[in-house]
Amino acid sequence: MAAIKQVERPDIDEGGMGYLQSLPRRVVTVYLPLLVFLIVLLFPFYWMTITAVKPNVEMTDYVNYNPFWVVHPTLEHIRYLLFETSYPGWLLNTVIISTAATFLSLAAAVLAAYAIERLRFSGARQVGLAVFLAYLVPPSILFIPLSVMVFNLGLYDTPFALILTYPTFLIPFCTWLLMGYFRSIPFELEECALIDGASRWQILTKIVLPLAVPGLISAGIFAFTLSWNEFIYALTFIQSSEKKTVPVGVLTELVRSDVYEWGALMAGALIGSLPVGVLYSFFVEHYVSSMTGAVKE
Amino acid sequence: MAVPSVAVQPRSSILARLAESRNALGFGFMLPAAALLLVFLTYPLGLGVWLGFTDARIGRPGIFIGIENYQYLWSDGVFWLSVFNTLLYTISASILKFILGLWLALILNEKLPFKSFFRAIVLLPWVVPTVLSAIAFWWIYDSQFSILSWALQQMGLIDHRINFLGDPTNARASVIAANVWRGIPFVAITLLAGLQTIPQSLYEAATLDGASRWQLFRHVTLPLLTPIIAITMTFSVLFTFTDFQLIYVLTRGGPVNATHLMATLSFQRGIAGGQLGEGAAIAVAMIPFLLAAILFSYFGLQRRRWQQGGGD
Image 1 (cartoon, rainbow over the protein chains, first blue to last red):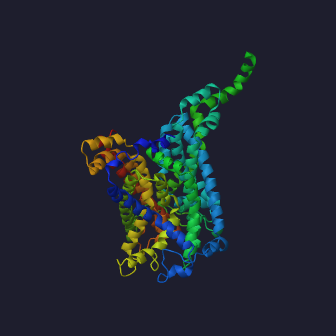
Image 2: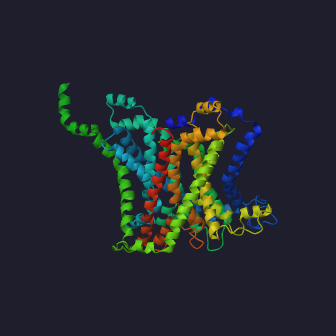
Image 3: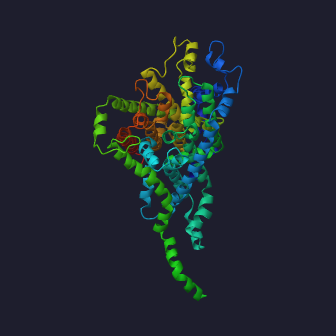
């Protein structure tokens, strides 16, 4: 909650000395660079969208058709993607795996963050540091030993391989983020509840969690987005076509030897980006504030 | 009233004492997270180091062969090329991300209409799955139908199509550009949050003392921003160094290994090639670089903060 306040600035401060700059100068120093940044950052999305609805004839004929525009938009690529490939199945897999991994990680992270931040058992500081260090361990150095483990545990090519391994990067992050939120909840509330005879469990579920809802939401969105975007584990641990997640499926199944179905590929990339895009646009304020809040800790 | 409470006492006291003990309760609360992390993070980390000393292959547990894998890698030109590529990729992409991200943050910190809209939309490249945006870049970099080549040709700047991913130098520049594209929003938005905590009064005071815009930036903005720059760039360097997805989509390490990073080489040898031991050894070889990168960017910038009298 403290993080949100830091991001929002009182209106009086807004651009304090802006009046010292003349308009032409602002155009050159602010508006023009901003425009260039926006064009560069958003162009790949525009290109994805326009390619997804472009008929194949226009896609490869740059002489008769301007490639930046589409003359006869078509839904053929999207129809092909949704009805003639396993794409809907991949979407479903990704939703199930991301949701399960998110809830598992959130539950574990809430308990851990509360214990580290509020129970203050002996060694809590060291455990907090260890959790932070765990966040710095990248999946690229873990996937080989994890693939051996996943295989030996009989989880290879099952959704559980991903549901159980995603928490390795989700729990450290969520714990770290929630610790910051729990810190902002006044101790006095818990003390009152303790005096009234509440157990620690009751305090957590009835007092701390309701107050930490914004934190839970941002941690949940973060965890969901990270699982949705995960690639290297999904590529390594899943073999059968119908069990793949969207990023892996689009890349490995839609790309055939030398015939690139660019329209279908772009449609797949676009539809795969939409859920996180929509989710995040609803909660963008939480997202930004938690990201910056977490980085500032 | 005293009688029932005495009768209840012995049974509840053990539970009550446990429930009140911070350590026992803390242990219980930590258990789920600790179990998951120990089993799926700490143990594999150790297992990876062990695998690096074995000749394990897919479907066959290896035997201990000492540092043979590392000896082999030491004399392997492709491995050293991947180390060079990783360093080049990390250093150039991080510098570009920092400069462009800081610039974008400074722009977004100005008084603008629709500011929160811009802030939201700028984050998009960072939110969407890397693989999916990389596929869009793949199409943008297509050797025949690249929109970039076409646009530059129309403007008369080049006379033949650019071979973005087929030529070693171009391929390196192209993957770095795609990585920078994805990394700018993260740097910009975190630095923007840092900028917003700098009090306006400092700028007003410096302006009254006759500071120019560059001096304002150099002597007010930069010193106050250094701590958050240190953290942001540490993360940025870490994620860039261990990048896998972008390369795997765009070039798979080619042409002639010119864009192979250590992570992609580790995957190619360990999973695709089945040499688990060798792949694990490459992954383990990343750890010293990672530690060095973290220590360098963290302590390097920390000391500057102290030199500038920013408080410890």
